[in-house]
Amino acid sequence: MRINKYLAQATGMSRRAADQAIGQGSVLINGHQPTPGQDVTPSDEVTCNGKRLRVQAIRTIMLNKPAGYVVSRDGQGSHTVYDLLPAELHSLKPVGRLDKYSSGLLLLTNDGSLANQLTHPRYAKAKVYEVSLSQPLQPLHRQMIQDRGIRLDDGPSQFGLERMEDGNDTKWRIRMHEGRNRQIRRTFLALGYGISSLHRTHFGSYSLGQLKPGSWAKAATSIAISSPLV
Image 1 (cartoon, rainbow, N blue to C red):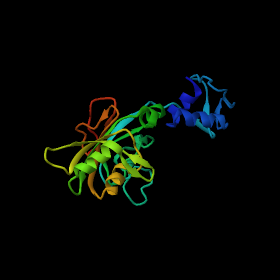
Image 2: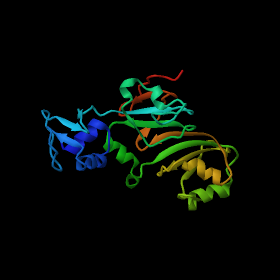
Image 3: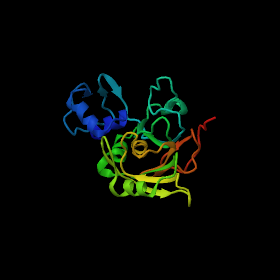
Image 4: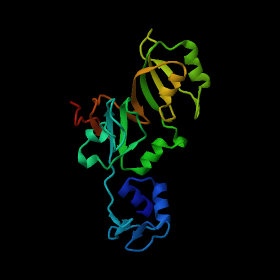
């Protein structure tokens, strides 16, 4: 196995971060700095910043994050998503973010390559959200969002909108390929709308399905419910 892949699997960092660590001299194989692209054998001892590494089994899970939980290890007084997971899953890292007041599908993994494929802009992975607005969305505002986008401080925000219920203009399904910080909330706020709930149901090929709030499941299998929120 190439050293950068070994490092990524052992630590959960991306391949690019692994290459940087190797280039900085932080990684040793049997006490020596590796050459670029060097292979690691099962008998080799690999260390990073003096800590011995072992390749971990690749794990990716889906979590149905409830509102009120922070996607962080340090909640600064708030509950974090790690409070919902058993200790053996605490080494997994979130793929993207959901803000504290949003709910729904959150992926966590130790596969740096997968995380990069899901979040890098060039792969343009679709994400689907369900949103409830404080008031009915006006047809002109819907057209503005879909056709031209709404100008925000970090650039235009554009996404697709579909009614969740016929005749109900407060509940919408959103499909987008970006993932900027609080983008959906900021877009509607710029037009004078509040959001009472924001829930992610899909991320790339992953779907929340029937996973209950506060529960997690292995991402590559049919949904097997674990650790329900009580």
